[in-house]
Amino acid sequence: MEIGLEYRYFESMSELRKSKRIPFSAPIEQILIYQNDYPKLGGHEIFDAKALDLSPSGIACETQAKIFPASMVYFIFSVPTQEGSRRIGCDGYVVRSRLEGKNFVLGIHFMDLSEEDQAIIDDYIESRGQSSNY
Image 1 (spheres, one colour):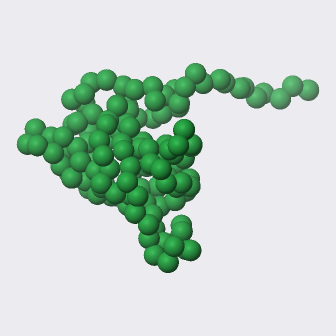
Image 2 (cartoon, helix red, strand yellow):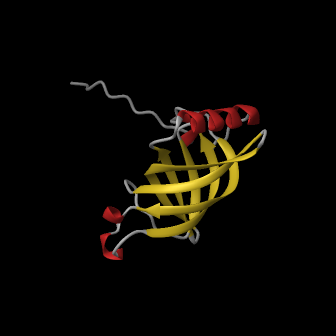
């Protein structure tokens, strides 16, 4: 008896992505990990990070901090606008974390962007007009 399972090999993560993703190199001012994820720290922990790419639904970044998938974080970054730049702070959910060399590469899903901040990110991505296979 044959079971109807189909396996598919994906060449890259870009085939699985739902949103357009562009290269985005900018410092992330801070990543704050919520206390519940690191209870032994007696509060929260703040780390530096550098953005790698940006999509309407999230951001990838690298940091020296070992931040686990499923961690809830708060982070701040700036997006260029026609008027200069817009500082955006929001909660996020770490969907992936992998070690690359000495740093961890995180994929963070936006949790609570305002409509205005979402529009700024969407406009910026559209203005760049390219997609990344990261």
